Amino acid sequence: MEKQDKRSSILAAAERLFSELGYEGTSIRLIGKEADANLSMISYYFGSKEGVFLEIMSERIKGFNAELIRIATEPVTAKEKMLWIIEGYTRRILSGIAFHKIMHRELTLEQRPELSTKIKEAIKTNLRVIEEIIEEGINAGEFRQTDTRMVISTIMGTISHVALTPSKLIPCSVLDISKPEERELISQRVIKHLQELIIMYLTPQQ
Amino acid sequence: MEKQDKRSSILAAAERLFSELGYEGTSIRLIGKEADANLSMISYYFGSKEGVFLEIMSERIKGFNAELIRIATEPVTAKEKMLWIIEGYTRRILSGIAFHKIMHRELTLEQRPELSTKIKEAIKTNLRVIEEIIEEGINAGEFRQTDTRMVISTIMGTISHVALTPSKLIPCSVLDISKPEERELISQRVIKHLQELIIMYLTPQQ
DNA sequence: TTCAACCAATCAAACGATTGATTAGTTTTG
DNA sequence: CAAAACTAATCAATCGTTTGATTGGTTGAA
Image 1 (tube, chains in turn red, yellow, blue, orange):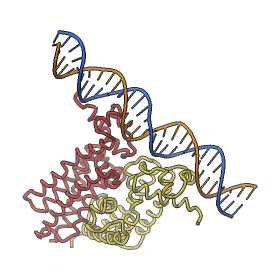
Image 2 (cartoon, helix red, strand yellow; image 1 turned 90 degrees about the vertical axis):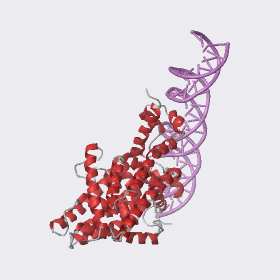
Image 3 (cartoon, chains in turn brown, yellow, green, orange; image 1 turned 45 degrees about the vertical axis):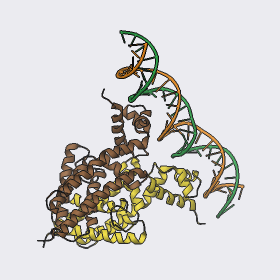
């Protein structure tokens, strides 16, 4: 048995339960049960219930900004950057829906300040990066003059909406977002729609 | 003092607390305290904590579909119907953000089946209505052939994103969505952006 | 080599606090 | 007076956390 087996199984179980039941809805007893670990292991490894929560978030938040900044500094047109960002953002969120659910809930509730502050700063950075790309495109005459913040809200809102809304309801009549192979189809559909929509909106006619 | 003063103050306090703290995060003691009512008044009027929750939702869900159907049956073009829907939906959600937060959380959590089923059916009806309007526009040659579901996801997602995301982060650099007069400015901004975006996307060039 | 010391990992049990709910009784009102 | 509105006290259950003991393995000195 490899080292820290319990530690990682606690993290795995907690991430699943937090996304399914919410923070308050998930008890450390249930986490321990699902992870097949004694409940005191949670305090042992992570200090507290909130410690588990923080750990899950911190692990994931990191690479998020890195990818965006990589795209932003690439030597291509603003249009190509936007296409790239839409694809990257969609894939990232749709491949980790459980995590996105948790993050979104934490962001709208704002109950654990240490955590929501961390998330907000990460998002703020991302926002600035996309904003600069769009304004770069506007200044280069590549894009029309538009409401930049609202364009970003549309991109993020659309992806988030598909990710968070029960699949039976919204995205595709038959497809189920929880199945990996069908999720790929949904990803492609969201990416195609958003790329068309945003480019058509940002690019001047003719 | 009017009749059922406690009853309505319980409802008001509960709606606020549920939206701020979530369902599990809100205790019936806190509801009673904020409503200046004994905690047993909650069981007295609503049977249980979940009863309060159900009552809050049922009160609001009703008029939602009615407005949509009224718009759908109006004798105007599909384009005008879409403009109308965007304005109506935006105003409705942004003027009741607390309620929208609760509904959204309940929809993504899906823990109280009686409630989430009710919400899902209401949304499903709304979806069908909008879908039919868009397809009506497509068949009339008024709109391009597009991914209808994704267009709807963009409309709902954008509005929801502005409503749910902490105002310091997303919509407008200075404006705060919690202040009524500034909320009107945000509403107008969202409506203008979405109407331009959707019509430009749906309407064939030239 | 052997035995004591030490280690992180794990466990059952229990802590006090808080949860949603109920009771039995009191006040208010028509 | 009787029904409705309201209250204080209390219920069992569950919450997050802490405790003290036990395990198996590694280390260090005799």
